[in-house]
Image 1 (cartoon, rainbow, N blue to C red):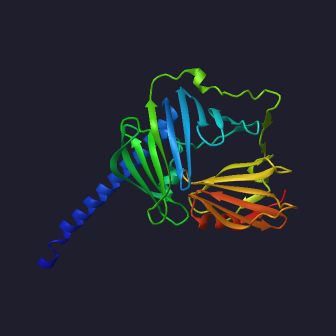
Image 2 (cartoon, rainbow, N blue to C red; image 1 turned 180 degrees about the vertical axis):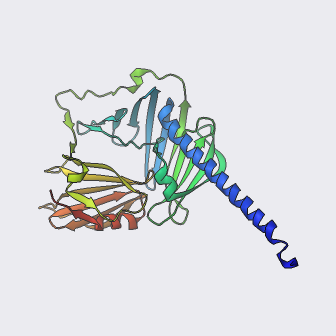
Image 3 (cartoon, rainbow, N blue to C red; image 1 turned 60 degrees about the horizontal axis):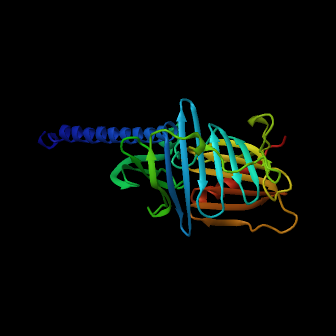
Length: 324
């Protein structure tokens, strides 16, 4: 009998640990909800730096939330000039060097600091989320969070959110060894206050004679009649975009599909195989981004993902033609 006297105490202790872990997981997920809401519901103006190995880019974001309406202006401050003006899902992207403005309607928008979607179901299914230590960035105290992937189809993520508002201050993408492959962080930030409407307007005039409008061509008939499909989609990833779009240098529209688990995103492009210079097939990498190209009959399949290489290769190899 004596050898079992410790068992109830041990089980009680184990249950206490499990309850503590569950409470900690719940608190971490609550922080993710706070981060997601803050990016959509707050006014903020800031400058952030994107660091991807040998590439660094500085951008400025101005965001205004007015009831159910979001307005945002995003512009690059170095490298080729680019500017994005967004009003809810209406997006205008300005490329002044080529004098092109792209007009799109997106139901899914993902840009720093709005990296998290309103629906966090996919993230909760695909990542183990836990709180880490607090730190400081852009003059703000922020709470750390670690998102560890549950499989090898996605990267890990380290986030830091401003303590009071929950706005995302910095984020890092981690490979399977816990090493940083890219990071993005505010260097200057102002949260709250009013936003002058003039700050949200474009500095370019797209109605000038030398500017050209470029609009995507939605696939007619909805998802049931789409000609292309990806058959082997990893758990947690859902189709977010399916359209035909014109692209610079392409003689005809390109099929474009986007899949996301709420944090990682993978784009699939399907176009007619070029008759002239043959593209380089196979795998390439740029920071956290992997690109895989392969030939499928008379088509070129290009998969671009913020994921490990196994993911883009798996997606490309499972692209199939469904017919009309």
